[in-house]
Length: 159
Image (cartoon, rainbow, N blue to C red; front, side, top):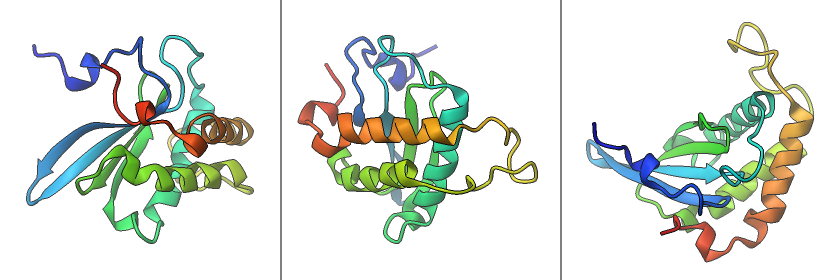
């Protein structure tokens, strides 16, 4: 079997950032898949499922309701390795195009107060596995360490 694209990225060199993972044609549209890498693979501890699940609920809710990108948002979800998330948008984008959007998203998560959207038995298959305080901490860390002063090397996969 042929190795899929995401397994050809050198995860030893990969650092937290925003990367275009792939672009696919879907009818007349392009779908851009972004790698929203929050931790350094194989160097930092992975995120626990509770905080990653909380980030998923908050980011997906925020993005689907975004005035500019809501209608272009196809998917936000965690990576199996628990080092980040994938974002799929309708349109042909580069990483730098969504830095403001990701900044807004992670500020929303960092500043969120109240009940996590969809964190109820009737809405979610694992609603008890949530950790809002840790999700807020990780969002603030990603903002401070990556998004607020993102460097060009954090927008293109390492070679």
